[in-house]
Image 1 (cartoon, rainbow, N blue to C red):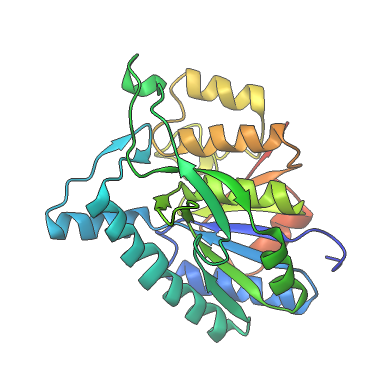
Image 2 (spheres, one colour):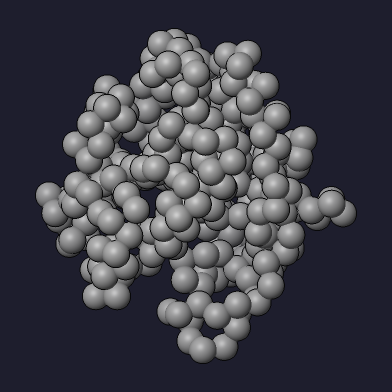
Amino acid sequence: MRASEGPLVIKLGGEVVGSPALAVLTGDLAALTRDGARAIVVHGGGAQASRLQERLGIPVRQVAGQRVTDADTLDVMKMVVAGKLNVDLCAALVAAGARPVGLHGASGPALSAVKRPPQVYRSAGPEPVDLGLVGDITGVDRGLLELLGRAGYVPVLACLGAGTDGQVYNINADTVANRVAIELGAAGLFLVSDVPGVLRDVADPASRIPSLTVAEGRALIAGGAVTRGMIPKLEESFAALAEGVRRIHIVGRLSPGDLAREASAPGSIGTVLVP
């Protein structure tokens, strides 16, 4: 990949951080950056946050795959996402030979946000739902991210945003990755989780769909083949494609070299979403 091209935006699900798959991914990322690619890593931490909430006796509530966030839940997200997972991910990248810089939305601020107003979610019924301290992105500090990339660093961005009044908001990591990819003209957006792509049958990894258009993806959602967390992932991806992202890759269970292979041959490893 030429340095003149846009960066790779790599979104990691929290289940990837701390798993054996992380070493494979960080090794691939380090190799790509040594070859001249620029990369930005965006990560969530939903699974780890839920486990800590349960240990602390804080109820976990989700609507349409998104976490309802009160003040206590937001504190958990700060501790888990901007704290432990960001540090662990940066350390893994250092071990692989990359030069990571850990960030959260209030750094810069890298992600400006406002509180999301109540809205209707199809799977939750006809009444508007208030998700609490969940934010919608109003701006990305493109200058900060590009400055770090030009200097050879890998920004590692936790999925929190900040309002002009200093209020911190929880933001879906796929939403963050999509917005960063749009704003920075990404050469590719990779959504990495513990599933190998969009599956026709969630119980059968061999049912991976190599390529999906927006219309085909919507049909899978309407027919019930796609459920739970994959629904907001696809819906956010459809919106990003509509705003100019050329390709979005949903990948998981990677072997060494798979990231580069999927970038050069879309759909060969995961599912590539196209307009």
